[in-house]
Structures are given as structure tokens and as C-alpha cells.
Length: 66
Image (cartoon, rainbow, N blue to C red; front, side, top):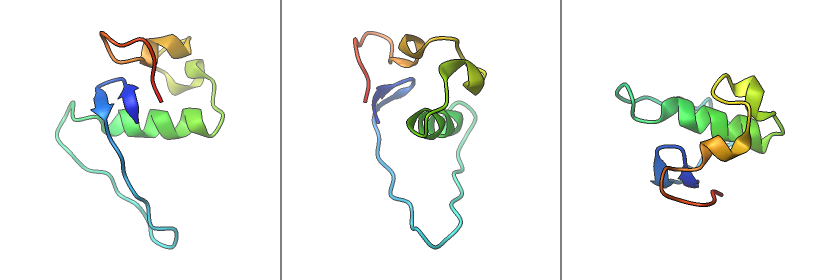
């Protein structure tokens, strides 16, 4: 993820045959990872419970995300 919500540059590699668990402190971006996965799989922004438009997921001070 680049410039997605609180993450400037983040990557994670999931193993295809094991269950994945994301842990971390409050505010560390766990829900951001889940939202990014949902949007990549075709969910609309409003179904994430965060926003009604995709532009609101762009990191503050940036113009686009990936």
C-alpha cells in the first residue's frame, strides 16, 4: 500500500495455505489493512464503514494511493 490512510509505504506477504492474523496497538493500522483488502476485492467505499468515497482513503498531504 502506498499513501493509503495511515500507511505511507506498507507491504505484507500472506502465505496461501495458512490463516493470517494481524495484530498491533490501537491506531497502528490493522483496520486500514482490512479496508485496503476489501477495496481491492471490489467493495465500495461506503461498505467499509469509514467513508462514502474512495478519495477519503488517500493519506493526508498526498494526491493518490495504490
